[in-house]
Image (cartoon, rainbow over all chains, first blue to last red; front, side):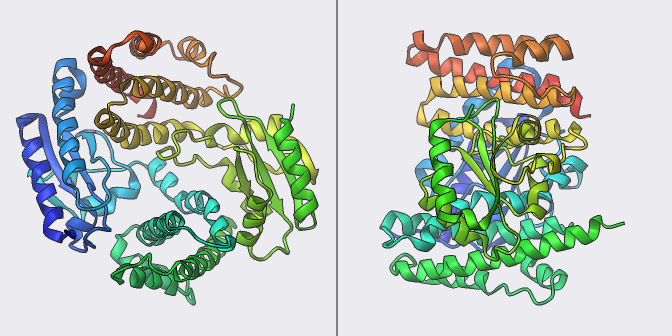
Length: 255
Length: 237
């Protein structure tokens, strides 16, 4: 049976129910990402983009921490069992700790409070975290190096196609926003392309639309050469973006 | 000392695309087998083609960076710390490249490598990434019942974290074995050290643990890891 958007919401409901067992130990659950934004692609979108904020005292008392961990661990087991698409664990977090700058905007703006207090106006990030987020684009480009093998490989296997597709989805999700952060522009995924075009006039972002169009196909992995062609288009886009960002940063560094 | 595999790979690389390269430099690293920095000539326009040719030369299992001269600053950045790459070489990379790197081909880039001007934010970022990724990685290991593996990895991640803290004291020439003593000597943080000792004791006992004990110990190891984060948090404030 194919996955539906409703399945995603049922899994979120399950997390709320499980974490609810912690009572006052959990300050809040804040959901962000595609489920919170309302742009889930059933079967393709991953979950669980959520922060479970715990009282600071939980991290100071062994018994309380181990009890909370037992509940969180069971909650993730349930997500793994029921997730209608790719899944990863949620984040558990001390309510007084700053959050990574890369997540700050989505977490405080394009998010939903699923349980407990709305602490979004208290969520902060630090300057070193912002500085690190500004370098994420370059790290992502480096981590993508092994993908270059697929540009020349004679025949792409089904497994190759799955890897390429997964990476393309990740690029569409994370790369534009990382490029924005490199430019010191802090916004959400939905505005990232528009902001990039504004900051870098003439930038061709068609590659990101090609990924979106691939995702909309009923069988996106059916044609390996189409996947390779989108990958090539994306690689050209990333290189163009990289060159423009390097130039821009050089300009910024000039006295 | 250059590994035979790296030496043979470099020979293949030079024979295949040497004309497009300005330099190849090997860097040793305290936690890995080191890596290579490959700098293409400025007139190489499309780096991805070069990278696919590098892969066709069958590189050894080490990290390699293919960066233009104007991109070498990236080697001095903090890095990303997070799964699926549980070890981030970056915090120490520039120090080891500049001070212990070996030129294998072409121009010597070591003079151009700038050491990070301020490493004080490195520890904060490393710690934040631990909160972000080690925690949720641990939840996944509990689901997979990889209790012993989780304990050992948490012990290793604590050493990496200590090593990043040591950079703020200009201590970059470390080894995995010497890190805990150096950390203890330089930071004199009794509570953090106690958390470390407890975790290290668990890691030493994993072979003797049955399933029930190993599950309980994995939970405890995560508690000790959390205590290490909590008690060293002051270095980021």
